[in-house]
Length: 537
Image 1 (cartoon, rainbow, N blue to C red):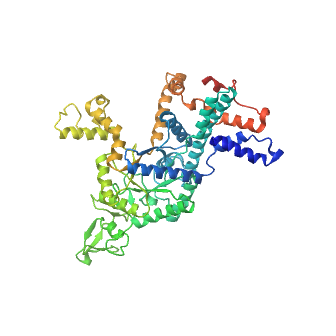
Image 2: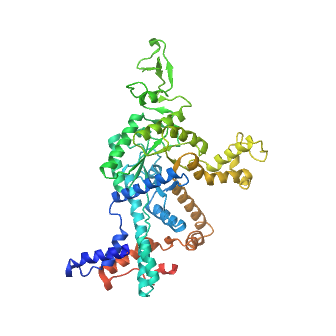
Image 3: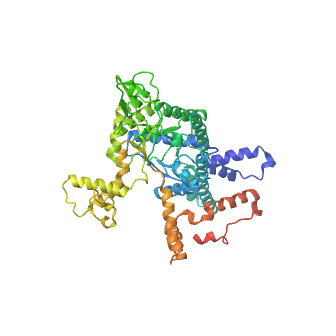
């Protein structure tokens, strides 16, 4: 028996036990509503999506071409439309996630107004956005199932048995729009207890994967800005443990922790950790500090600190603001130590923040980690902070230069840094080759550099700005209403986008059907031929 029909049968048995008291309840309608609300809580979602991610991680270990992807979303509606689009165009949401960016929460969701990515926004905004996203994704399920249920009723009215069978199969094999979220907890928003408390809220809202970075929480910076200050491993690992405890307390045993290192671009630390035995993590961390050898204690100034390091007495270089500097050129070594340490102490995936999208650079670091932990996997930020066009054209320029090619028709990046951005070059061999590299970047990096998950942190921030810019230019310019009709509505119709029926997308049809369930013939409906939504077919 179809799972749907079985659910109806179970509901009929439940109603029959109540006798006349429940005679107004239609078992099939109740079964439909139950299927449209499959996930009863955020923890249901977290457990469901964690299992998806674990399965995808195992698939990637067997075949690195099976990497996963996500786009950063700053609103539930944006996430919903993204999921609907993927399912409509590609037929499945398998290996497609959502990324929740702390940058976009700060810039777009704070009561303080737009803020930089420095953990100054309300931390509860993060869990609120997770909850909002899943509310919209669940509604996408309900809307799509409502269409299938309506078609099922129509097939029965027309006695079309083959279509009825097909629709029952669609219901039984329905793929939910509820997909994994990788959620950014920044640097934990405080100490390890604060990290634990926020992680619990995020998991309760539905997050199955939490990403945390090794910066100092109170001076946290965007990963692509200067002034980043890292914490010693013991501080970071305490927060990793806090997140794991939160997952375990809430019964999400497959919960995933993404450990992010900003050490490649961070040249400062706030603390000099205490080493308890030779070669421990504290001594390894301190070994990267910029120091000055002290040959005579008289060289020390008031309140200087010293370390006994490698048989010598040294003084860590301390800046006027009290921070300590790492030696130049130690970034990659620090990244590798961060990654190995994180995986050995409870993290599941890595995130290495880089200054450019270069497969060889990423592979150099990840392959060193893999020498110690062979199944190490990376989450990588395909960041809008990179000038992708410029960086890949520069890469191709250097490749052609090394091959002795004639480059006289191209601007020299050393004297004209932005020259390669010219649209006049778009049809050149250099630009076409660069675009091919960009197109294959994710598959190349997943194959060669251990990247399991590719995300773009803030694509919908930029896409929204671009769409509004284009519409505003035409609407307030010479095109008037044609700017909206041609640039938006007509395009939506021809792309067969669900959102063109915005009333239905917002829940009108579901609401009408519920009214019919609840009030029968007395229901006052918003749909029908008089509803202008019928103009769209």
